[in-house]
Image 1 (spheres, helix red, strand yellow):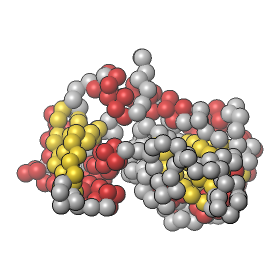
Image 2: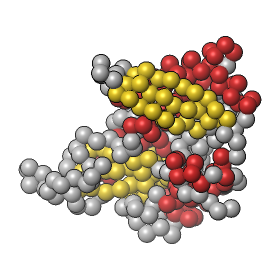
Image 3: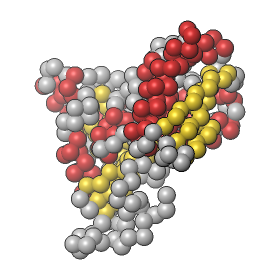
Image 4: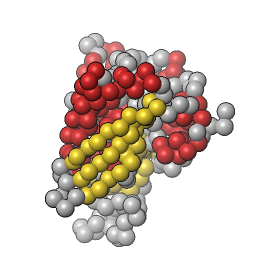
Length: 312
């Protein structure tokens, strides 16, 4: 989407503000759930599976005269496979265009060794740093939250520490208001009603991938991919969409299809409803399952996902 041509002032004469906030943290800290809550719309898929988010996704929130562009990134962990390295590299790369860093941690999990590594690297980053202790609803002994906040403050020295429950919306408004005042003055980069810059075809593919993880959380690896291969707007206002689900082995293809095609029907039905809600009209969704072996060594697949291709 093109940068807004609107003047840097609102009609009331107040200065417009606009800035980018990189959302980083370990896996399953609830980063995508928090971004969705801050934006007020679903822009990033969510599942219990680790590394659900792959390439950085931008979610756009409005708060007063401020436009906040959140860069939702993959969870940072110790990478082993090529795809792992690509996701972690892209996650840290999200800081390059950011005006501030939002470190999101699972309050119930505490400060693990992985978190310590993230804090150490983030400490050398020269930009405002805000720490968010998420999932506070899962911490029964509330004094532990204060201890965790103090420990985090001693290690990172963040500008602020927020305690939130993204799932329940607790503390989200205060965090958004703070960030609205933090971002620099400048023209908005997107239209006022935009919530993301991700193409609709890509969003649709992500929603189908979310549906796959919902029904096959344990059975399939996170390397399963989905591509929207065709999208036709029909005369009656609906859309005909074709997508291909790529797996790595024949055995995985059988799992996705299920006995008598039962599993693929469930995946398709859930994905169709999600896509219809996003698109605002009826959708006819057709899913195909194909085996694509060794795709992790194909640079083209990384380009399609918006990820860098690690050379080794």
